[in-house]
Image (cartoon, rainbow, N blue to C red):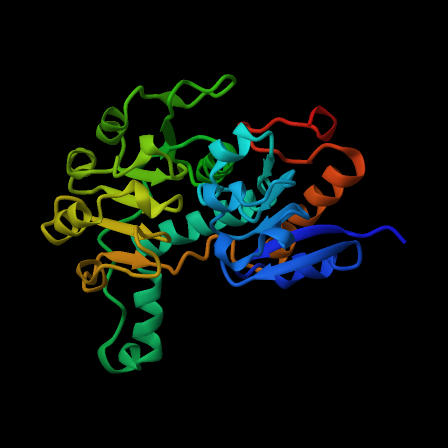
Length: 322
């Protein structure tokens, strides 16, 4: 009987991934992505990996037979893709299956931020409606606004489609204009912020996106401005954001992601004009199961057919080229 292909799983991953893999692969678990936790004799037999989180260069170097790393999530900044690419190792992610869920959450977060629905529900639950009367009118509305999307990838376009249904004008900024897109393009984030009063960030964590939403960009949004971030906390200067929210430089913000998760700055927690979620944009059973299935399916496709289903752009490899 032929030995099963060995798959490394460092740290935790959705149990559905393991359920899908265990009949066909030999799964090796370690507590975290640390090469010291895996003896060299065992490391030599690892051909694939499934990961939710980090997978660094040191671990990649420790695995001489590694062919493919299947990452759980559309963002794959935790994986050292450069180190993988240098070895001809394919890296995969889970795009598309979470687009609608994240886009839906973005709209919900925007509505919560502008119309203060969580506070209104708390008003009812605390008995204040009966004691004190109607919840105060919200100073903000979606009516008459223009939305700017920072990052018009698959999820950004799904968000834009939903915003169109609310009658909002839409503009965007990416590194270069998107073909076949009719929305107004702005060549810089600062110019986009100056042209809109809702800024929605949905960009990945890269060196080029670090704290790009800074004090200047936030000031450009203006006193009626609203920031929504569902991409990466890495993108926002949180200290500057707290300052402009406190001082009324912008009107409100809604955040699903933070710079140092799960640590949320106290300066933001204490503000009444910010809506905060604990990174839940794709967090439904249906969507997380679809993501788990794509992790497993990428591994099956690589070892059965020689090509992953959703390789990241940096590693467009096939198994026969190794």
